[in-house]
Length: 198
Image (cartoon, rainbow, N blue to C red; front, top):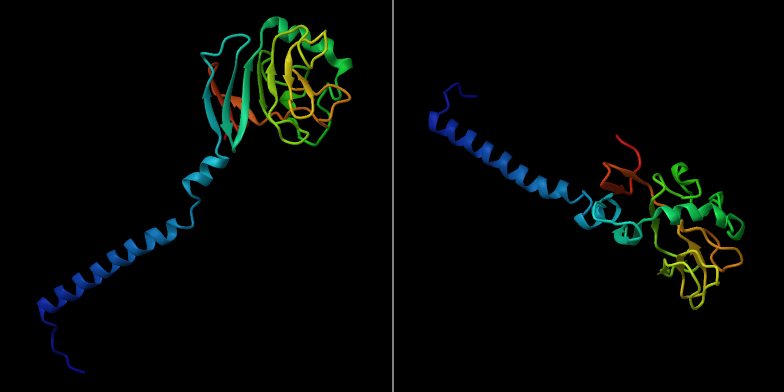
């Protein structure tokens, strides 16, 4: 072994080469590690959706997408809310006690909602996955009873739901419409897909 000192220019060259190698390894590792993260599409598929409901007027409904499903947000009128308890005897599960679609505790009421006037539900029939159509106006209409109070009709097999998404008795749909987890961020902002504050 020689005790001779290393030339200063060689030392600089060795340090520079080592640093360049470390930087190159870092640039190589970042995309590799990032490939383990879920894609933007996958994040969007399960991510909560924030919705502005400030423009929603009484009697109107809007639809947003969450996890690839249509989610309805309806602002019911005071008359529509008041009519809900009168329908209990005609419904298969008026208190949302069935467990096929677990109903959040805050929606286990006749309005099936946090705020009585705002109804949030997944717009997919519990029978075969069709999307029911709006039949919001009360009164006789084709394919509906003469004492219709407003709600939704599934065109595939005739299941009917009230304005709280509760299925009527003796219909093909086995359960009420699903109420997704949701919470209010403010009076005009709704978060669908999450119902617990961190």
